[in-house]
Length: 203
Image (cartoon, rainbow, N blue to C red; front, side, top):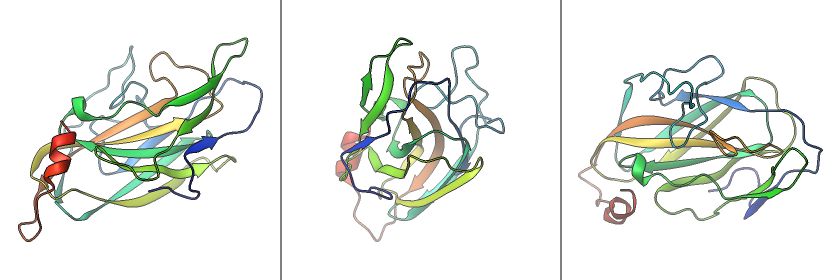
């Protein structure tokens, strides 16, 4: 699933490096961490926090029926060009690595130029290349989509939302991405087949 444009690679301009960072707030479903107004702390993969501030657990859980659609809503609190990706796994160990990033060298270190996007994502990724934007959006921009949840039984599965940032310097805590997760209690729909293949690849 690719939002706004279908591409294997998102290229983002050739502006000279400037100090910048992006932030997003996970509105729906509720984040596993207590968020500030900007969505912090959100740097460390796979679910946020920073080296200095690992974050406070919110203990929030969202009940979902397997095989149904889940509404995802994020607020971009500080603009940066890039895109979003959504993944789902039974634990943090099954969540994917951050998007593969192509960089260029600068006198301030590596600078993100593009990232690979899979137009046909497979488990554990549910959607890739969402909300692609290379021009400034207003602070507080809302992005929304629905993703189909696999038909499985899974207590406290983790759905991960990653914001990949272009035109950005390397961040020791978060590479070129910011992260949020939400805990889902998924109950399979007995009228539908179980997604056994998804279970095999999400651990």
